[in-house]
Length: 363
Image (cartoon, rainbow, N blue to C red; front, side, top):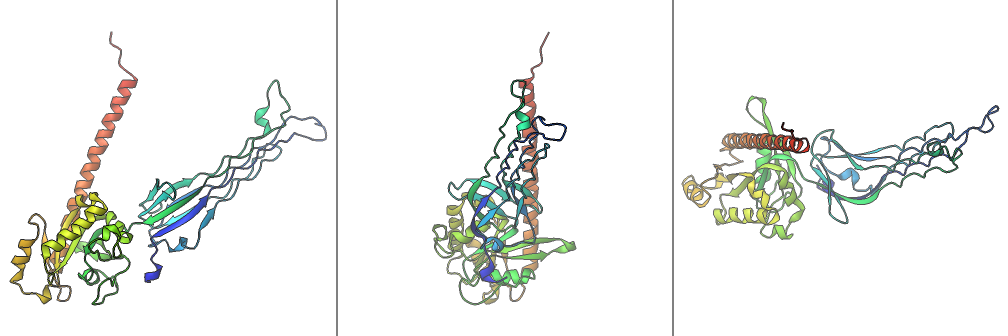
């Protein structure tokens, strides 16, 4: 994927269609010179939908399409013929896209599943024809409704990469090299900071034909939550990862401090990120000595799993896969349990509401 082609933010104007005018028509035939009203209704304006497409990875296809306008509905006709509806617009977006109002920053929609269809802007309703206004006191109504105007708004679309595991670390910590070893992804790799300028995804093959997705997020520096370095541009991608894998190189000056800085930047950006399960990985062990492992481990939190690896020699790679898979299964089980509890609570609330609306009368 070309670096310049990774677009994860666009601002576009969307406008749904206006409803068609109702018809003010009267039936006129050879033997019916004074027929009653028979004006048809106008067609509704075109809707604008969002549709999830797992084959899309960026918002590049929307970068140069600043205005998306749905068709207007057609006017009604005589003989109670309704006008045609305006053609709907379907905007395909990659999974993980959120949409906000550009002026108020109000959250509007979120697309997370393949084929998911969300109505972003409804089209205006078509006006009613004069046949609807006939009454005993007015048998020849000469007016019909105009169609409703469509909606018009500027929206911001942001892509947050969906992945099971997010690689978090300082520039040059070895994230891209690790991704290339774990999966078939081929990110750019070089011996200088900020080699990775866009998120890269890789599918990791695990035992018994299982797999999970790992995202290489561009390097974080101290002050990233305030916009330094690549800053806020890519921190949002970490929000969509199920678990976080922190990479700390063995040649770091202070391993514990480096981890605390990374954790602090995530907390400043979004405190909810600290609720995600974490795995610590000490990389570049090929340039270290085995005796340093105990010293490194002692400087890191004791309650988190620590894996020592070398992407060059493949040391610890299978162990890392096992730890990541186990952690993912724990996270999935936790998520399912929370859903069951939430569903039970909702059912209980619904039952209580019904009992309050329909109290049982005692004799």
